[in-house]
Image 1 (cartoon, rainbow, N blue to C red):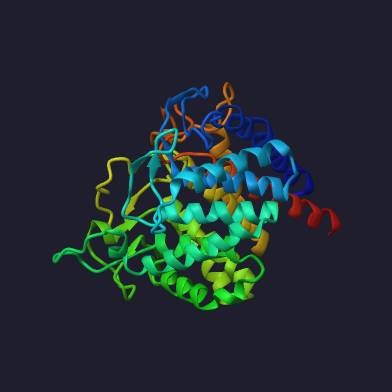
Image 2: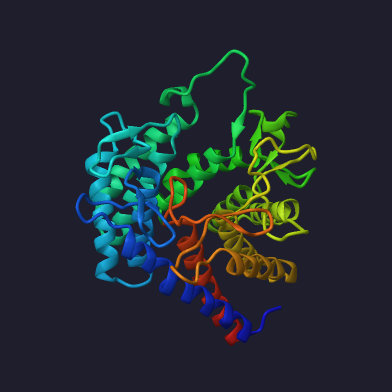
Length: 395
């Protein structure tokens, strides 16, 4: 069990990394002062290597700086960054039919559209976060209306252009119910009861992926939750399952549901047990539950975001259980992450390592890495450690 000194040491570590390294990198290098929004493809030193703007990352960055402004300190520079992003999004990212582009040129011309709902989800998150930071209710109304559309699309992806072929095996993807749960949390705030049917259905759909008999969380299952014995059905993504676990845990606490609390704790523990590389350290990106070789060539790589999600999920587990195993998991993944991902020379974190922990890609931002997983995890862990410090000091 950590003493007050240990908690303080970790809290100071997260605080320093967030405010002295990670946020300054994005503040200094990402704002597009000509067109608005953010450059998200940034080399190690912050130089822009691609001016295209990926909208799910634009939305995430609006949410991040809005949340910092609302919950940490009302710094004008944080609000200015959020304002720039929300204006760019509303001027360029959304179409008349409610669909949101995946990427745009620097000045807002369409480049790419996906047959998925995730750009829309992070557009909504941006609106909700900005509304709560500024008190401007019209953005929340827009978020609520678009959430209703996304909810309808989520159960039938043919509505966003996803084809259905004769030979396809019917399946359910973990990514959809988990992102919807997280999105409802952001949009609903304290008035979540009005979304009770959607919350219940998202939880039901998520739990189909949790196989207690095998102590595994599967990315893809049959519509009834049963196991699919092919590479897609056997796929484990430990970081994704861990992130889903803390999403679910937030709702377990709101709903005061002990059974759901236990399930969420176990999702995190089981995914750590399955995913931790006992030889080289860190979390594997993908695994095959049948012990076949994963078909994804990057399966053994160590990526930034699973470790970010794991730091917070393990710490949240400890906050709720006060079990030694949960603290040891938190300290293990935190020590690994801080010794491998941060860049002491230019700030922020590298995103991609090989199995042995050597950096493979030097950039700090790309089409799938932006200002989100690292600062969000650092912020949530910092806040949770402060709570634990106060509780320990009072005990």
